[in-house]
Length: 81
Image (cartoon, rainbow, N blue to C red; front, side, top):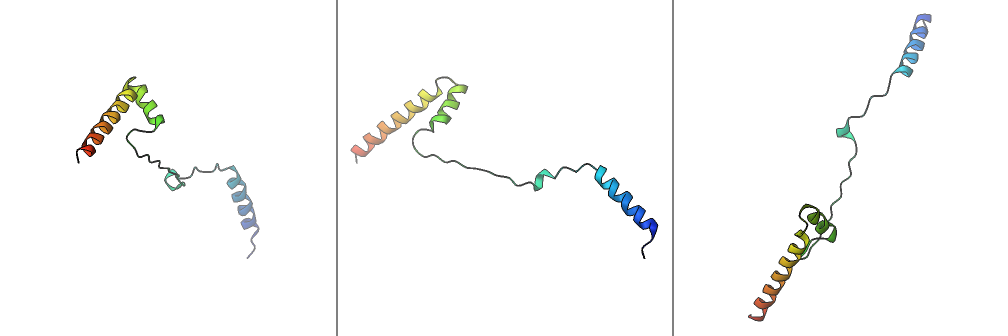
């Protein structure tokens, strides 16, 4: 059943489809990438210390001093064992 009107309708639909702007994708369905970094030790990574210093200029010195005091206490406690 090849009706001439159906061909005209198909052509009109095709023309209209080309004028439709693509819809943005739902962001909740987009792929996501995450990363995790972990550090261990008595003081934070230097980059993190720098960020502390931006908030409080003497923060890095204070954090390092706390780590030094803790190390000194730990050493004394081990000597007493």
